[in-house]
Length: 491
Ligand code: ADP
Image (cartoon, rainbow, N blue to C red; front, side, top):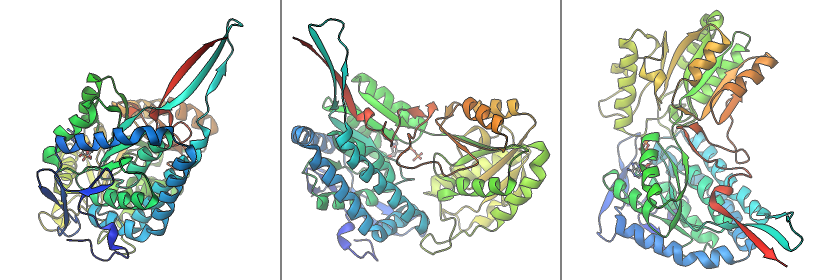
């Protein structure tokens, strides 16, 4: 069964990609991928087990020496070509992404552009893997530092950015000279396989890029194999903090280098000196990107008490204007959530907040959301929230805006930092002293001041505390895929 409506049907793939071949699982088993907007089955892909993953790792190991030790121009050329193919196939890639994830089509197009920007960026970085020459303490020595590709990398990616989380990891790894085994999320393997089809066209040698697919039921053993295999040098994961902790434990057994991009709980703080219209627009962009299902989406909205009423009215009008519906139709702001489990979780959090005294200002009546089993959740604006409610203390991953009130700058910073992880944080203020104070005091890896569109290929993306380890993208992004080697030369 192939995906309908594509210009190039070769982008609809139902096999995994290992050693340059399109392969089934050894067991022959497959699992179904469905469209969360309609419940329809799109296609099935291989249920790969740890033994299949071992084959992919062996292929990546075999491909490593030539890829790593060849000219950087080969890596540069292949990455640029892959980016170009993504650009020319943008409509098909966006359609596949929307069909399997429910992401509104305009956002899917935006993600394809964002995803390919990492390929172009790191293609350029291949020629900047500069080492160092250190002054020797004695005239009889010369001290050098070189950077070398770390080796085979296991990349485990989530469903909320089916293309960009792959390229943000694979591009620096491949640019550095590593080879990769990628496991996309079980909800969204089709975008990953379409990317593999384009990588094949771009001329990456067999084994340099491998993609294995597996359903939730198998993911624990597959994930363990990817993190513990002796031939894997590095594990890079984006997903929940709970799963990140499991993978860290696995990787620790082999003392493997790890990068973790885990859950956030982004505060969005509106001070009484803020431009409230700008803040309300920024909130909408940040909160409702992919229906609230990104790790940098605003989670808790903290408003200084003097502007709470005015700000609430601005947000209420904007939330009421959101269009929920078919993500393929232009003008839709919110599609479905990723799956039924996500709907149950978000509804449970709204119920918890209402039972603890939150006030439903828009939505919140869960009878409105549609048929049982539907993945659609209408947007909810909640007033009178506090940190005892799960909508504030945990990552929501849904279209729910909890409003909390605060009095002072110190109180705002204290509440903002009162969570185990810190990925992104946003605040609105026109006071230049406050801007520096708060930006420096927020315990997060990325701060948006009077701005919520913060991510791009040129900046170091990542979090602090339990939100993760390492940075992706930017001139720092290749460091995680390389080792420094010191060479001490006696002369
Ligand atoms: P979410 O709850 O948003 O789906 P997860 O962290 O559960 O976030 O999933 C993100 C990625 O982690 C997906 O690719 C999923 O398949 C993978 N994953 C989930 N559980 C495990 C596990 N035990 N080992 C390895 N990968 C896992």
